Image 1: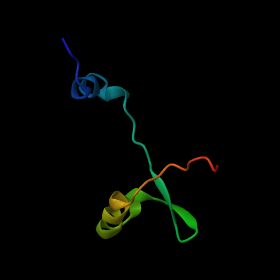
Image 2: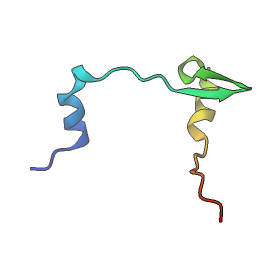
Image 3: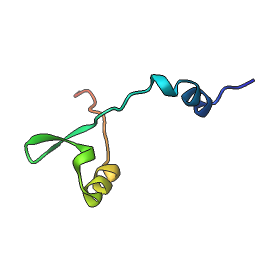
Length: 55
């Protein structure tokens, strides 16, 4: 029987805690949850990248 991610989350619901996500805005850090609807949408659409080695 294959266990799905949804089943694992349901079984461990009482162990979960809220995670605050901060992002840098205009030179300082702010929690994303304090953004207005438009700014939250912008944050979701951002392209994330990983920095590769030089040379």
